[in-house]
Image: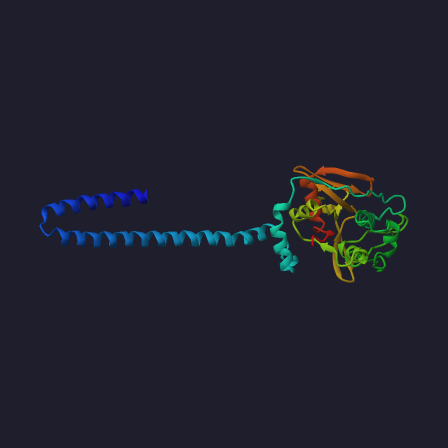
Amino acid sequence: MQFQFIVLIMISLLCISILIILLVKRTKLVIISLISLYLIIILSLFSIDNKKVNEILRKEIAIDISIPKSLLKQTRENPKELNNKDNEVDTISNLELIKDDILIDAPIIKQFPELPRGCEVTSLAMFLQYYQVETDKMELAKNIKRDSTPLTTQNGKIHWGDPNQGYIGDMYSYNNPGYGVYHRPIMELAEEYLPNKIENLTGKQFEELKLYLSNDRPVWIITNTSYKKLPNTSFEEWETPNGKVEITYKEHSVLITGYDNSFVFFNDPISGEKNKKVQLGPFIDAWKQMGSQALSLKLN
C-alpha cells in the first residue's frame, strides 16, 4: 500500500514537471531544479523506510530474546530448584525433544513378601538394575539411612521421625509401627551406586519428567496407593526433631516408565505389575500432593 502511494506521487510529479518544461523557456534550469527535487524526495522516502525497517527489526529481536524467559516460567514450578543455570539452559533447549509418548523396558520387582513397607527401596532397585547396577531390594533396605526417633504420644500429638531424614519404623513386617522414607535419603543411597549421576527433580513440573523419560530415563517418584489426590482426612501431622511433617499412610513409591496423551505407565512394587497404566491427570495430582518428589539419571 505504501509502495503504490509513492509510485502515484512520482507519476504526478513527472506530469507536473513535463507541463512546467513546456510552459517555461528556461528549460535547463527547470530540469536541474526538478532533478534536485526528485533526489530530495527519494532520499526522504528511503530515510522513512529505513527507520521503519529498523523499528521492525528491533521488535523481531526483542521477541526472540523474550522466548527463553517465557519458556523458563512454563518449565519451572518451584524457584528454589533453579540453582544450576547451565542445567536450565539445557532443559529449555531440550524441550523440543519431549516425545508424544514413550514406554521404557525397566525390570519389575515386587516388594512382597520380604518388604511390606519397602516400596521406596524396591522402586530404587528397579531404577538401579535398569542401569545394570548389581544390587537388590534387600541390600538397599539394609543400607537406607534411618531415623531412629522413637514413636511417642504427648498431649494427644504423635512424636516420631522425619521421613526427609531417614526411613521411619519397621520395613520388614506389619507387626511393628512403620511408615516410609522420602526422596533425600533415597537420593543419597542411589548416589552410592551411581556417584554424581542422579538428578533431583523434586519440585519440578511433570513436563520436565517427560524430558527425562523421552531420553530413556525412568523416574523414581513418591505418590499414594490410589494414584489420585487424597482428601485432607487422609493426612495427619507429626512432631519430629526437625519440626512438623504432614504424612499419609497411603504413601507409596513407583518407577515411572512412560506416558502418552492420556495415561502414565509405571512399575508398581505392590502388585508387581509392569507398565501399569492409570489416568495421567489424577496421577500428576497425587504426585504433586506428595511434594512432587522425583529422581532420575542426569541428562548430561
